[in-house]
Length: 378
Image (cartoon, rainbow, N blue to C red):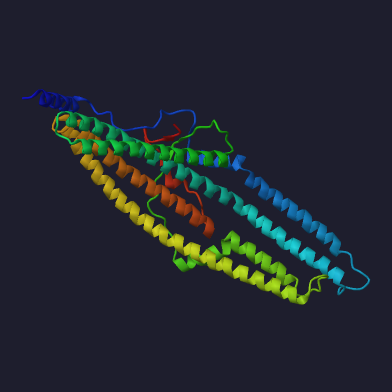
């Protein structure tokens, strides 16, 4: 046997003997571990939107009270005097504005809940992608090492080696990009929770949702149209315009009043149409995600079984470490695909629930991540 073949055989034997380290890039548990529930509690406490909604109610109430005091004045010219009609209409508008502000305050927390769930799920998915890309990169480096040996002994062409080397460089760039995406998603979460730049969380919750039970689409649309923030805001604006039709408003012609009313009617109808379309789109998207999760579960089960067989072969010395490495990446890819699909379903559910006036967050949809699968900023 030639010297080159001895070298190749020796390295391949070493690859059979060395124990595989596997791929797990999560950091050890830290005091910064945060569940989805803890993230929500922090947002409710620190997010300014809730405070702004409360202040908007207080402001609207003060405006209404001031307008009410002006209404108690009855001019000598009677109730038909244009100046008084303007005052009365101002009070009507203030009352509508107050009722709208109160409803907005009630939905403000749901809006924050959706934002946190969406950001948390995005961070999990981005972490998973970063983890997978790093595993692919490490596997490619191992394969490149084996290719280097093969080229040295003349069993691999230089072109094929350079091709493998280029592929490894590309994977390195992909990994850096995915890490940047994860950093960005954590920055978004920090902002929602009111944390500083040095806050580095360990996201310890994982979505487990596989299905989202809903009513008939027509019933869902009906409820959504009555609960949509955009719809009832446009409806309030329409009511304000309608309230002006019976008054002679100084400086505003009847023709202008009619135009303003028609614009408000168009905006209201458009908001209902757009909301209906959004509900229908999300309804069918939820169906699609449920199907993807079911398929991903089967794919992961198959990959997990194949992985066990591969590990056994490696322990028996039947395959090289490079073969085990590739199998590990395949199994990880299946696991992450399933987890990311569940995260997407959780995001769509939160958005759909917010739009249709249902419970945006449910603790039953989440669980604690297994050891070695928590997402932490690197």
